[in-house]
Image (cartoon, rainbow, N blue to C red):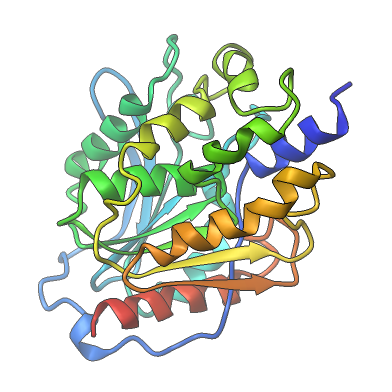
Length: 288
């Protein structure tokens, strides 16, 4: 049986969250060069294995959904965002995909490194001819990947929405968790060898930390899950610092803002319309 705080951390390392008020997409944000057939649904070779991608809607920027971590091999993670896409596809193009080893994508018999996740996404977008600009919608652990992808592709990304995500700055206060079994680092071997994705979340956070303070000059909205507060872990030192860590991270974006929703951490299927509204707001701010 997992200890209570390990269970809480696992929930944090998992899938989703966000929200707010819908805004109209400005005409200038729409692309006159949208692809003739923007619909995509299939498998694409990304270098020896295939990933599943589905896109609907038309226009620009393309909203790219990066799902959270997957611990149940029966989960098809891109499906978490189908409701969000239904609210967005009349405004712009929306693409969802499953990372290697999960959902409808193929399995690779190897440990993943952070660079593998980024390379898979780069190759997938190229193979499917999905062109920038992108607004990244990163859910939980997917927000950490969105941070890395945006930092490494600053010319391709015009905005981000992070849904109750882990951010690299959290490593600065990881020491306030118990040494064994509850820190990001203490879980990384189990993440690599026992979970479907076979990726160390600690390694991805470490990889992302190299870009701290060098985020691209694009807008970010970070959505907090009001029903699963980050500052109620039961560890006083962590709880006293974590919200400052999150707000400090958000403040480095251009502009950055936080919103709090009365929802649990796992919220894509709970509040898809609000999440779509957050995305549209970022698109509008990116166009100014």
